[in-house]
Length: 97
Figure 1: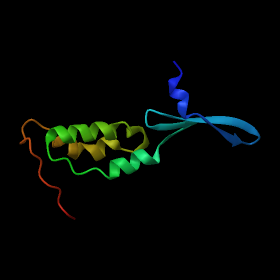
Figure 2 (figure 1 turned 90 degrees about the vertical axis):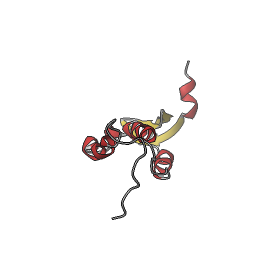
Figure 3 (figure 1 turned 180 degrees about the vertical axis):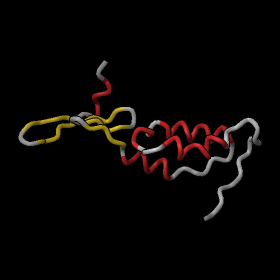
């Protein structure tokens, strides 16, 4: 039942011991939740989605971290528009700016 505590490790904090744990892609500590660096590196290393299905998958992965990104919906809106059924299933390549 407490299998999620396998990543538990003690951290010294002002003479008291607190614990941090990795759970569902987040680091959870005393009064703090943060994104794990290994997950950010994995997202940055992804290839550009070539189909609408791949774009939906990408947006789903990014949506997990929406609480950490200000105005996530505004940033994701153009990408979400590419998943419209009115567009072809194959996505256009990104433009170099």
